[in-house]
Length: 430
Ligand code: UGA
Image (cartoon, rainbow, N blue to C red):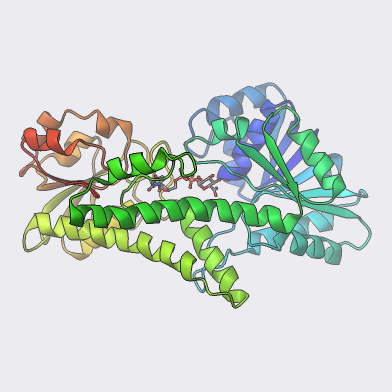
């Protein structure tokens, strides 16, 4: 099939590269000319394992190309996929549909062929596909459009694998849109959920909410475990072995981050409020996530004794999770901001991600984890990168001014750390 993908961010780019690898003829379009130039040269603007090799392979194979701005060539394609960003609107937590609206307008202005199929892939509030449809019709009264919804379910850091091996593919729309989606994903064998566009959009938001809810429940329970002398890891291992519950997303820590869970949980709250539905359960998940940073910071303050002012604190991990360079809504940023507010001297290392400006200028960015730990009074672990798990902790102890660790991701065994001579605190374990 000939596929036109608008938006080359995390979702659009992975989708473009993977669909090309499945044998489709794909064109990725973006308004950012610098990014398009980089992509045309085979360069990858994001860190995503396996993506760059696949990108080069498919450009060389003649199945993948990129261009700036939507143009009349859109009519040469069988399907147009909208994968532009839907950032959280600060005012009310709703997803900002500005880029989706702009894209729909541009598609309509260039569409001349009859029966153009347009598929929404960006994560959006329920009802957006119908709004896209209305927008297309209002800007182009001649062409007939079929609007479908095929929300993405990729995890950053595992996106290529997730695309090629999904648990399920969600397909919403009329028969024409569904047949198109079936053909697009013909080579992927998994459950295919066929429904209307509203339900498809809601499935995506609900899945993210349920996963975020499990994390917040685990984090709230971690606090109880600590207070009562239970071990949250063992508790969740025991609970997760119940097949009805399952083992995933029960890892206690400093809370969830990234561009999806924080945005989508707030989006559900705002949809509920819009319909005058009490968002009690949705709000609780967000509140627990926010309080988890305070819980973590209390541990740091207790360990620092009296004040953090002018104390040297090392932070391992900036990315919101391992295997990505994404720092959007990363817990690390909240932690670093809190440390700076308290007057601490912060030394940071992440193997891939960087601290954004202007925060970057208020800290010391280190070239490796040992340099970050050198001279520090407390080491904070905020992202569970493998290299941290494999660190030579005897060496770290020698490098630090005082051997203290607050482990926000439970990457070490508390007993082993104490045997090595560390004062060690983690989440939900004593
Ligand atoms: C999430 C979903 O997992 C994807 O299915 C979805 O497609 C994507 O959002 C999206 O909407 O685009 P992602 O944000 O990349 O993917 O990352 P996750 O692996 O889900 O992790 C999210 C956050 O939860 C991270 O900060 C992670 O550290 C945290 N987490 C995860 C925990 O704190 N505990 C856990 O047990 C699991």
